[in-house]
Image (cartoon, rainbow, N blue to C red; front, side, top):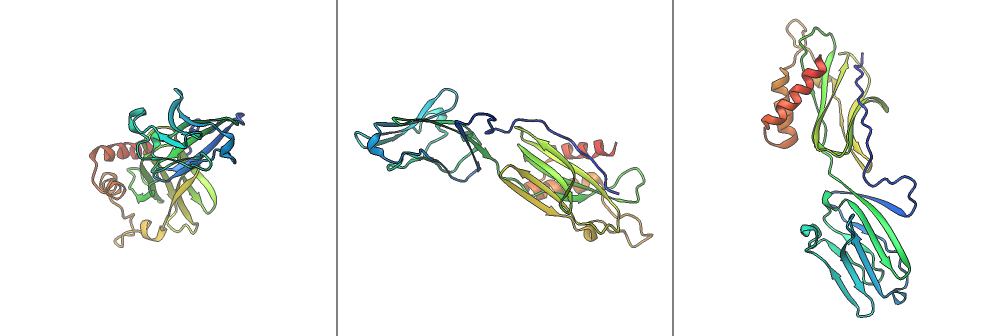
Length: 259
C-alpha cells in the first residue's frame, strides 16, 4: 500500500507575469550565462543603448553609438554585476555571466527604437534527492521510506510510481529542507522514483526496493536503523559534513509524519 501524503504550496514563481505581453520571461540555472536580446538590427539607427536593472531602474550598462564607447557600471548595487556584464557592440544585447540568484529581477532596455523589458529568474542548482529507510514505533508490515533534500527554494519534491505522481511537497522563495515519506509493500513490483524539480531542471533518484526494503535473516523481521542514525547519514551524503541542526530538522519531519 502506498502512503499518500500531499502538501500543496501556492506561490508566485518569480519571472512569471501573467497578462504582461511586453515583459519577456527568461530563466537560467545559477552559474550559467544568459543573454538578453536587444532586437536591434542596425546600430546606425541608434544614439544610446541603455540597460537598467531593478525597481530603482539602476543604470548598469550603456553603449554610446556616436562615440563608439561601451560602459558597464561594476560598482552599482554593491558590485553584484562586477566582471559579469558583456555588451555586444553590434546589437547592444546584454550577457550576464556567472549568474547568481542576486541577478534575479527586471531588466529594461532603452533605445531610439523603443523600450523592452525582461524578467530574469536565476534558479539555484538542484541537489540529488536521497532516499532512506526508517523504522516506525507503530507496527507496520510495509517498508517505510523517506526522500529528503536540503536547502532548496522554488522547487517541488515528488514521489512517482512509474510516470504517475503519488505525492508532492513544494517550497517557494525560501531556502529550507524538504522530506517526503512513502510506504510500500516488501514484494512491491512497481518502479518508484523521487524527483526534485523546478521550472527548468530536475534531479531524480530511483528507488531500489530490493536493496532498501529487505528483511533481516533472523526471524524475517524488518531490518533498519533508527531514524536519528539514518538521517545523520543523509546529511553527510547531501552536504558532505554532518550538520546537527539539519539532522534535528529532518528528525522532526519524520516524527511528525509518523504521528
